[in-house]
Image (tube, rainbow, N blue to C red; front, top):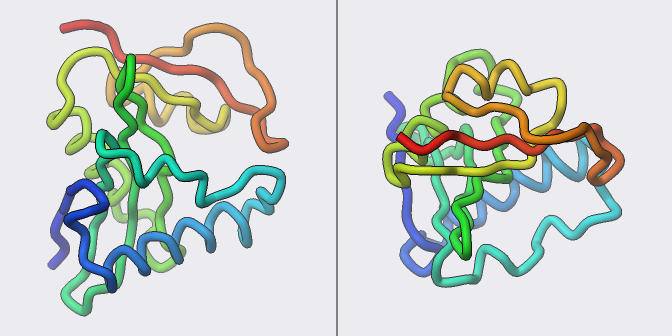
Length: 144
């Protein structure tokens, strides 16, 4: 049984936070080889940032994302552990984030995931560009 959780960093217990960060480093640094951008960029420390994650009964983090709120709401750092892929965990997190933040939500999505994010109401805004050496597209939901 898995559960969706979300909280600002200050309310995430140390063990879970460690597992969230370890998963992000595994996916973005080790698997995707993103080394020209700091994974730990300080944005998680902002009081308006909220972490979302799915944990199994043993405490392992299977998927995570973060929501940054400033002038806009932005979903990023969507990552799923290799052992949890293909089970819909990332989709559950995206849906939970959209429910928690109704209205316009933006993201910088890896281009190959454009159709997948489209399932959740995101549409492409503008041209493809490189971010961390990977093709990305800006995407946004529309006001309800």
